[in-house]
Length: 299
Image (cartoon, rainbow, N blue to C red; front, side, top):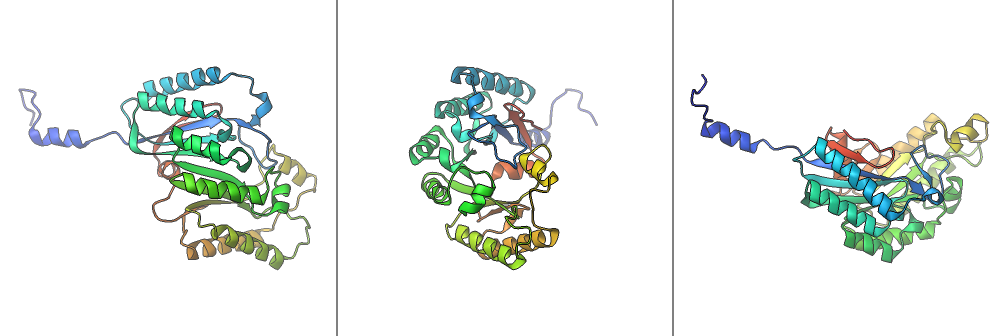
């Protein structure tokens, strides 16, 4: 029965007040790297190609953020994720300015998670401290391997020692420190012994877990089209573990991480309690996010 006066009952008013827009995430893409990895198919470019000034980037990011806010106003931003590329190459002042723009447009939640990806060679302690002061709360370090031979095979420019040093610094500075590792890597010898490859990964992962990480992203290597690795594989110049070995590596990875208190909360992500990546988890659960920057997308 409709109320002729147009008044809303107190019960309905209370129900309407309790209906709030869900939180929002913001992804910021920085497309530059000092070197392009042979397995990478993301929208990345050599850092030497960045000819725009910091002021130009500031205006471009602000324009995209303002446009996105016009499409999705009235939301509170719970998470921000700076990805790439290598966003630790961004000037710290630009990171701070982007966060200030997000806060001015939508408002940042009091306990917002601000993640930023970094490479060990672009993550000296003073730079990490400056990023923390700018508002970054969570650092994801692109280690990929704690073995120098594996790093060389993956086209990485840092050493295992540099990766460990950067991660220990990140642990001291940020609320959460995470690192990525790639396994089921190319085989230096196609006839490599199954047991030897498995033992090597068990040893490397155990050493990584001994660093007491709060979060790890552990990815099996995939050979993507239009990458250097794809070309090598097509020419018969790249050997990767067969399916049985890859499956066994995955099972061993799950067992070791679970025993260390970092169970999987997604197929490739492991964390101790309270250190799940809130940004990625919201996306996996169908949450809304804004994509800002070259090649970024949102939902």
